[in-house]
Image (spheres, rainbow, N blue to C red):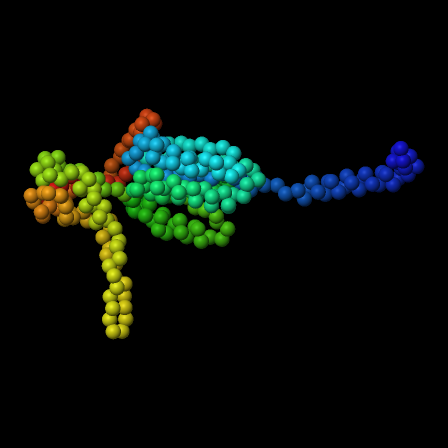
Length: 295
């Protein structure tokens, strides 16, 4: 009752108090920060892996299941989901809102490393990304075209020069190129020559893989200096595969090599359909060695 009695006896003081409170609220509203894209980050970690040639069922069995078995039971886990496509798989791990994202990503990375022993040995290491929960939209999208450069040359220019230059701009967090035309080489064996020489497709695959790597070659010492020696044998063009020795166990002919009957280079437009029957148009620059692969 004392508040009511005071308000009746001192109306001016009460009125001034509420006027000051209203002015303070109006001033706070004007100074209230606003943003079209507020920095809101949810504790979400995404594990992605690529295994070219594997069907969605194989990606689920060989990649997703080992990762889910290891991540299941992690601290502060809210929910977990996974998607599998032809050659790619992604596991989305969502944590509770009060979870420290940095420590959660480290824990997920540790468990993914543990799951690697249950995955194929030729699988590239899965990528753990903690920026998937950020709600920041791209600020700027650029499209490039050229009348003089080919698609692969333009893609090489973007990867080697443009992306790195944009990343050096102050306050740029990330640059993601898309729509690139990746170069790939197709090797088409001649079935008759394979059967005649006793070679198999894994023999050809192993021969090309072993000759497509940079290896340390030791060290060169001299009285005045020393230098490291390395062996560069990366395949950068289709013709680099010509003459690669082909080792075939128990083969009668010991000097087998990889080589073509004809060589062609063309710009190929292809349409692939995965196991889910979802059309995926891709444009690929192809250089291939076809026929007569075993000499």
